Image 1 (cartoon, rainbow, N blue to C red):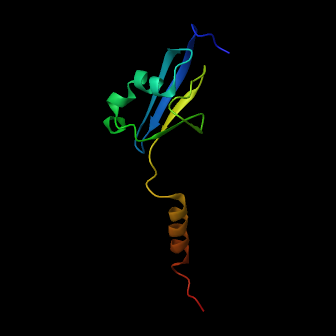
Image 2: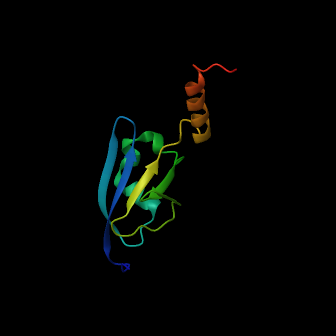
Image 3: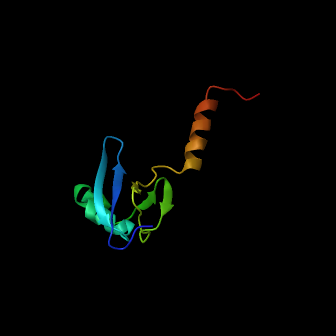
Length: 103
């Protein structure tokens, strides 16, 4: 466990279909996810994030903005889904069944 005066190394990542941002930074131990996102500069680079209307996670697990990051954590900013997973499955199934005739 890191002491309060220690510095930890983390990454903040945000990906779009055409590009991704990966920012490595050193933070004081006890820093929250929201603080790391602010420190990373990603909010300035991607103005659509300024509303904070997104979810976050650490190493693929959803977390709250108040979560305190640890050394070597990878903070991930998640984009909103374009379509719900259940709707995507339904549309794929419709596409597969298009050429079939019911008897």
